[in-house]
Image 1 (cartoon, helix red, strand yellow):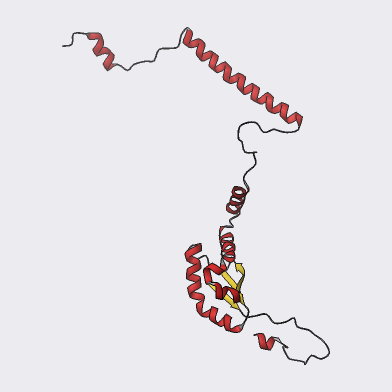
Image 2: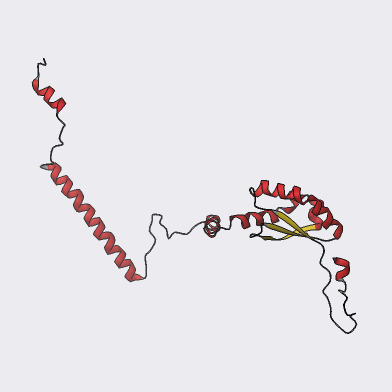
Length: 183
């Protein structure tokens, strides 16, 4: 048997926290009064600022503070879902590093069709257009390594654009003009 019966009773029964009394009760009441005063003061401050022409920024950071340009652009790109077009735009800027200097001198990316995931490239001669068509599967693989799988499905290679077609009295009916040469 235990020598102290009150010790065994305390161990078996759950302990109750004593109700605050005296000084503790005063502290609890003071803390509650301070929180209510702070809430009333914040509400009064907001009303006062609204009457003066809007809320003003304080010493602490909040949602109205200016953002850095880079983070604002990244947020806009993410919100609008422009990640793939922005990445392809970066590829267009780095085109010479991706395809090499010789190819970059003669072939230039013109646009990216996001729906078809197609990169359209214009070459300055039909010989370079043929060469790039042969390199297209390799370039698609290299671009997908850089951008993520499936960002570019195919590359459409276009030959050189011919001079502007002129219509006039010396034009032969049925001819396609200089476009015959620039196919």
